[in-house]
Amino acid sequence: MPQLHTSVMIRYATYTDTPQVAKTLVEAFLDTPESSWLIPDPVARRRVYQRFCPALIDYGLRQGSIYLTEDYSAVAVWRPCSLILPNPVEYEQLLDDTCGEYAYRFRLLDNALAERHPVGEHHYLAYLGVAPDRQGYGLGTALLNHRHAIFDTAGSAAYVVASSPGARDLYARLGYRLTATAPFHLPDGGPLLWPMWRQPQLARRYLN
Figure 1: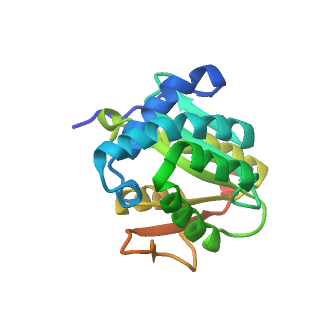
Figure 2: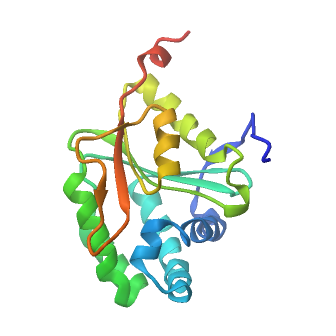
């Protein structure tokens, strides 16, 4: 039975963290439902993600912010946005360069997400990854609570798309609620996804 962490050191990621952060994201994403749908072949999936994740980190640091636990075992990629892709031309090139023949699958995913992405100012949790051998220790929760406390103080909303029932339930415990478009299937027999929205928690905003 994992021992839950009561104190986790969290910091902002920089470009020098890219190799370690990419390694965590690759391992965290390899067996998720949407990753298996994106790239059915597990050997090709690892190869593509080893190219995609470093480029994603570079893009994420320029378009938003990345937070991690001090030991690199958990990573959260946030974007402040009113549009899902702040620079779609750049992102399209990133997909072509790193995903090759599978880029069209990533575009199917992005289009499905964009169709349901809410309007208005909010913070978008684009990716949350925890190393497989560190899951169940509360690290993802610690990363989320770290940012939620700031959002609550500022009165900012947050948005995420859960890709598994376990993730959906975790987000629900942290104040996220299903949107009107939840759940929905990805095309071509893809898995269920659950768009979720979190209003700032007023009780936190007025704590002394």
